[in-house]
Image (cartoon, rainbow over all chains, first blue to last red; front, side):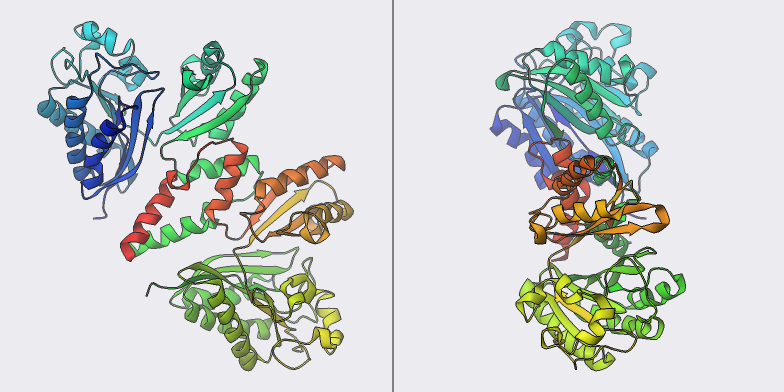
Length: 306
Length: 306
């Protein structure tokens, strides 16, 4: 059988202390069969996003080791940052990449979630494709009110964790585990310090308020830079191309008399998402991804393996 | 020693008869060590562009076999098409890809050119980095007046072939062999049937008339479609990004009151050329190519090999 390949993108609530960041990442560097693709810390968000690729078993081992670091080094009671979170290890999504179905990734999420709770004592919520309650498909429903509110609300029946007792870990909170499609984190920075502009534009772009069906968006201040940001997750880039989302935001920003300063692709992105966008802006007709020399070579190398 | 990897992009003067095109391409399909990346025939140009990657020796073997097909099946006396040409096998460039220098590709071009003439009787001109006369660095100098003019001018000292007697092959003309950087073929189609517009815009964009230093451009009619085309070779996409060239043409076209209908990337293109352009249009700040998941995986697979 061909090797199963998944992506995993754990998010940790630490984006400032570089020595803690390196400790959190270390297990992903050393675990054989788990490849550290990328990791990016953001001081404003006070958050670390790690991108891994590899086989399911070694990725799970490394996740459990890294979680022990998070428990020892991160205290949600002290944590502040611009990005919503409920835990030291905030979110752990499994993403099918090659020779594995979404259904298998859901099963993987459930198995891992139970083991994770057993070994760490941290309660677990399942989200997206792995959700056990329909409303929990949406991460923002689980994370509403964040750690501070969830501490007391966790005893409410509708807030009860999917794995574990209705009580947060005293310093590490709770963790959201799930399975989903490849998610592109895409941010647009606007030249104003009025966060209202970013929040209002975020409303018009996100599916939950009638915008693009596969876009999640929030408006945030980037205080250190004196800018604001429309911070987005593109949940299905094939359906909602980055170029369409950006052009929408450019139009809305113009209405506010505010310039787009720059955009950010945060973490990893599939080549197809960028190639769709470049073909759009450059009006490239009849373009095939296998015209890109590196993609053809990757395909050929992939064929040799099997 | 690591395997040497080159690209080779032979251009044949046949873009209409599909059975001849398949015969020309067949040797590249069957030769071990030579990978047929892509081939594209264009009826208006009446030209076939083949992209190969692989090791130098097998690529040369397959080229010689394909040339025998070209000699048997293409007659320049009968050939008509929108693209300049002097031979049935018009141009054969060798391009360094991996573990091989430009100097070695120049040596390869010279060795191949001599053997090619011995086995086929077709005279050879060396161009670009492999040019033996400085003015022949430029393909358009060699091809000036095309096959029809070269037939008589070949006896002039300044038109004498670099390999072979001063006489064209009676049906296959002459062949230009050389070594160069990765070349991106990029065309912009304009909504007019007035070829003057394409020709005037081509003048403003090409280096030889004061435009972009690393862009070659001609204006052509696309008679079947009732459009005109600015047909370009971007000789150094790192220096002259596709986006800059396209924006220049969009501005010029506006001046003529003519719309850009579409663009074409013809044949293979390195990922970097497209990623530079998408970052430009989307204002992506601080973007690294190793954020693209396929490029990271290719790098990892490449590392495993050595």
